[in-house]
Length: 288
Length: 103
Image (cartoon, rainbow over all chains, first blue to last red; front, side):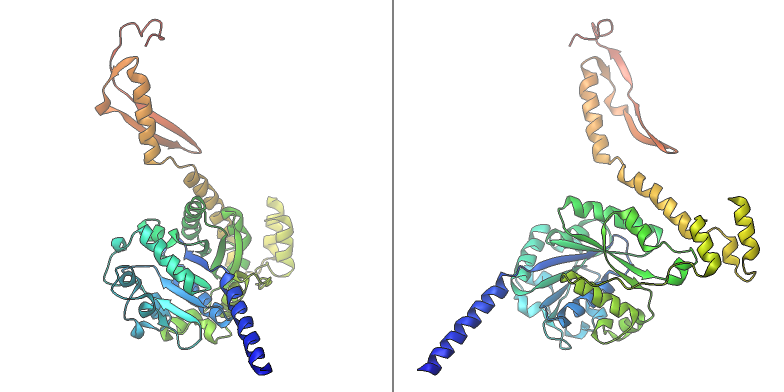
């Protein structure tokens, strides 16, 4: 009798626990940039892996219809059967289209359709899809196509928050500014910045925009700095996002970003970007 | 400042040609600041269309205009912008030319 009672109590505790878990609201985050080739897909895959390794149930959604790449970067291209357009058109159920990543529990990929165009889905359908994913996951990361047209708007419409990927270059910062303006008018919040491919040596030499300059121009908050790292290309070649194992600088930066997304107060990695030596210091003081 | 720069140059290591060139990051920041101000204050084609229609509505009260030949555009000259409008007038409506207030 006692045993039965304790079992009953345990069960109710478990139920309460799962109800509490359900109460935690899922977050949908769009990863975008405006300009292409600045590291949206790399960022999405590495952050998704890092979040899953931190114990969250995560889906990385490839929202780039017609130019799907997230499956390849994550090394899951051979396991793609259906895509999210199939889900929306009723060709399959959501869990048939989701590809479970076997390397870490709680990580999934939702691929894009490769043989369709951007106008295969509309904004209402994307909102519906995001609603379905919200029920299933703790975090939804949307890998957005480049540009400011329909593809971007579709990817962003269902998101709560945004991560802007920018490289320390004039065209990238300019395009990011336009995207930020559009996301603000869509009511996304918070909108936070990832400065990608920073080269501390070039910043030190005065030949690369430094992070404070970029933040000053764009006037948004920073969530992380990812240094230029050869391991990004190695990881892409192998289809193994760096955050699975590598201790490389970029991997560490992405892990830190994931932890900051979850609300942890992780200090920024300090890169040696200050001018060096006596001469450098004199120059810095004099501002020349 | 020039003298100080010259003095600092004396201390520069000769195998560092970067020191002699202007740091390009500074240039990038300056250019970005201008570009972004320009982008943010840009007048969209939609706004120009609205302006065009509103102006026609007002002008038509006082004069006959050739709507097919209206030109409206934003012209940039250095740091300032100008709204350039060219509206061919066919004739001023009777009574409008003197008092300007009759509708």
